[in-house]
Image (cartoon, rainbow, N blue to C red; front, side, top):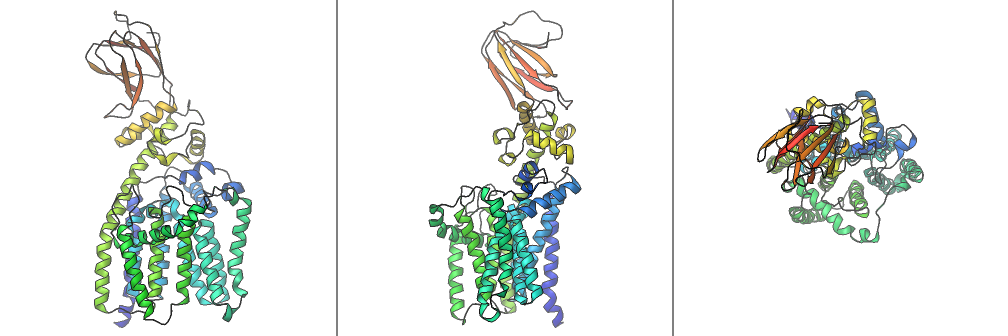
Length: 551
């Protein structure tokens, strides 16, 4: 019975891992490639050293690029599910490392509760549901694994630590924080072990320096004196946001960064408790300073490179920040065993925190699903217009309806599609797509084909002509218009703007130029890969005639 009680946290953690994995797979099942992932798909289609080693912003992402290329090579671009499944696996690995690390230091039930908070951390939905943010997850898992290997103080453990540090560095800059933590480990044990273990830090650092000299110095950096001076409040807000998110008190708004008001109050209270707890103990363990080094350097690196969009309260930073808060708490509580009553109280607090966090995770998934609809519609529209689209045509926010596709241009997309398949809607799929996607496909098509109009002074002729569609004054009609040149004649009266749609149902998202009464307009529609005709909405106070070319 005693053995069963000791193993209960492990069994419950395994069940929590399974539940979290199922939840994340379900939430991400209908998602496609998002935002920065397109930078890899579009801008790194070759296999040169530059394709792998060029920095993303200021980060080394060589392993992330290699992983993306491997998945695309094996499974193509028709679905993003393989990368989402890999992301779920890395999240499970990261949570497992946090659980193991904390379990070795304090009450296993506290380790279980900490892991639950991390597994279902809704305010960190960007990391939980966006595979590109593996740049935070893998370095956290590998970095913690390296620190656990260093604790063995064996040559084999040191070798594994060096390898894991290199892996962490190759996935993102968070690896630098763990490299600093490893350096502190070597420094603290220098009197007993000497400096012979410094190679654990030096080897990954030399590899990183070689990358920096060759490619990293090309990156755009934002280190300024202002950012350095502003780093202390950034550091405080970073920890406060992490604490507030763990508590479930972060406001539920996935389109804006979580505010840290409650987090600031809780952080001050926790710091007071930590000081009191440490005052009652002779000294903090050496491993506390390793985690503190990694945590503080993580926030300082972010502060030094701050630009708008990289605020300390950004959801993409919450995951690593929350993990560091949990790890620091475990170091402060090292050796503590809770009573049954205290465990129940902690479980209730965690349960209350998890409920709003699960809501935020669902809201984050809903946001990404809406983005996936736009992504599939926009990229599908470019494929439909492939015959005539300008190779340099890009999906700017005002055309795409989202800022997440700024890396996509027609040339890169069509090349990738020819090699790996299409992530976009086909014409038949667009017909059944959500209205937001259908509308945006019309907008993209109008720019990509492109649709062109030209007005002229030719007066409206009263007599009808064969092949033309006459719309009487004061009535409204949808006139199908095939590819080619269409002549729209407007009887005398006020100026009129006409509207078009193709896949949209509830609106006409494409506007023509306004033409004065008594004139005409030529609408040029290039042929493309979709059989559905455009529909011209005719609604004017005067008569309108729509004629095919030559009519």
